[in-house]
Length: 516
View 1 (cartoon, one colour):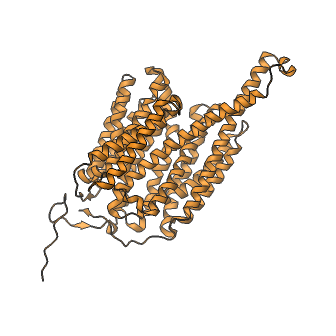
View 2 (cartoon, rainbow, N blue to C red):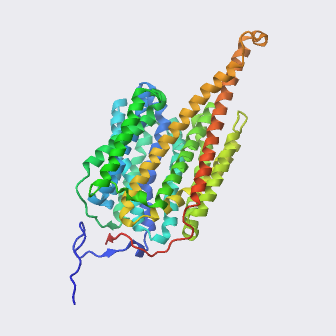
């Protein structure tokens, strides 16, 4: 009996042949194209921070005003990322990637042309729209073009950009700002984006356009409000006060909006994000571990340069050069861990990597005013070995556990969770650091009595020197306490790593299809 041929999926021309990605042998070239777009956007988030003082000098404005260069970008990312799953299905992943590269180049050019602070902030908002789309859809595309048994190798190559870009940003940004000019940190994106567009047109396969449904407006509004309020609270908590009415109002609004978002997504027929990903324990476990890894990595990238500048007195560029070796180490470790992942699975790679990171972070609790830059380079490079082993392995294992139909939602949620964990981690650690410095300062000065004869016998110069050394001691102690907390968080994450899969994957299993 003859059966009718199945109808072509929506978005594919009748007669087009579907090719399973696992059967494609030419996936390395397209992967390198994806790395270009992802690396550019991740680098931009860290390179801009170095130029903030110079921009403030040229445009003026208060510290709170100038902070909106970064805050506005982060808020828009929180709104855009949840829509990437729907946009990828609606527009097509390949077309959306190319358009986003063009959009990011245009946004970067406008930022470079900015004539005052309000115009720069407005252009950063425009730049953030494609900047939020690119990192999310590149991972979705990766899992659709790479054979299942090569996930680790592919994620290792992909991780070179993910891990190395944030560490290279301060060094590159410091050099450009000091020797060329701050506008070049935006202009440098243009040739990279143009090259990415040309390579994408030449090398990316044509992805099958997925069936799309009506946009989930209620889900979008609630998750957008929730993410904006949450990220704004994390950004402004230190300056507005964590117990102030505006911050408490933002946090309450965020919790209520996100709770309403969950209820809506569980009820609607075609949700903006498929929350069934949270029913998959390996994926949920990977999110928990990734959150700790993100907190630890960005805490190191943020607080080590701060220590180098505020305690050891190094200039910004030299501080950036001290932390740059760890980026090179991670760039080497990420591809290596990918190959090991394909062979042995994620469990022992992640556990050993996290324990190495925990030990290196523990070494950082020995920071003092006498710590040398050589010691800091050694500690950060050792931590980079552990991070390089663990990060892409845990991310690969979580995504590989998902049904192919959940990949788009999984990558979007993965990006959101990483961004929120970075913001929450830095905000919480910074708040703890500030409160500890206040308490330690009060305790130290409480030991000194104004009526003590030894105090009255000191001259003004000696008293000033005593105050300076006491202040420096307080700052150093707060840094060591911060790294102690990060150490124990990493140890806990290593415990969660024991629940990950052990053993490599095979190339069998259902995979999404691509059009020729």
